[in-house]
Amino acid sequence: MAKPRDPAKTAPRTGPRHVAIIMDGNGRWAQKRGRPRLFGHHAGARRVREIVSSCPDFGVKYLTIFAFSTENWKRTQTEVAGLMSLFRRYIMKEMQEFVKENVRVRFIGDRPRLDAKLRGLMDEAEAMTEGCTGTNLTIALNYGGRDEVTRATQRLARDVAEGRLRPEDVDEETLPRYLDTYVLPDPDLVIRTSGEARISNFLLWQSAYAEYEFIDTLWPDFTAKIFGELLSGYGARDRRFGAVSA
Ligand code: IPE
Ligand code: IPE
Ligand code: MG
Image (cartoon, rainbow, N blue to C red):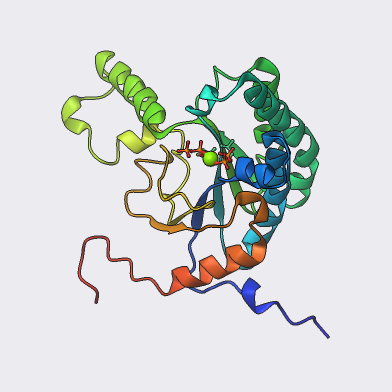
């Protein structure tokens, strides 16, 4: 007989298709244990797989996670170098697993500032999972919403200057085509862990009508069970997009 499914894992019918997560609280999680911040980042990275693997059960087709912001360079050199090395190792270690789980991996953010080895691994991960048709995992690495809109505007302005686009044809559909997220739908739900109620420059344009969940749990303590509970709560919401409920 088939094993009964964990009710928390049953996909809510009206669940979000695209969930974005601001994975915050790694540093505090480590500090609480008297350990260096990087210990928390490693624990946080280990959580990612569980959440990615739970997406098909929950009907989440797109998962976008904030791994490193354009502002995170302000941290100590030790922390930044540790994070970069963690990203390199993470990609090397997890890629086969993602292919096996049919996860399509993409990266958003400003790549030129990242080191060549890391950029190479990112390209490789994207190429290796190009044919995967399951969960779409997007990792925001050196990502900032303002930076993304600024880079998009530069490319758009170039198209205008070179005669490929007329200013009067620029509408709300035009700019998103220049954003890093051009192949993704807008997020339906944005979750931030660790108790901070701010979005810290994440998906500014794309989240205009997203629902938000700010929860106290620190990212390394975030489980698939907690994820499932948040998703069930989402089903009860009435998203009106400026209109009046039917
Ligand atoms: C989030 O955890 C991970 C990154 C920003 C890279 P933090 O490192 O911000 O953890 P806290 O907020 O200091 O606890
Ligand atoms: C946001 O967290 C960025 C990531 C989770 C990668 P931060 O910890 O950097 O944000 P602030 O500094 O609290 O706004
Ligand atoms: Mg933080």
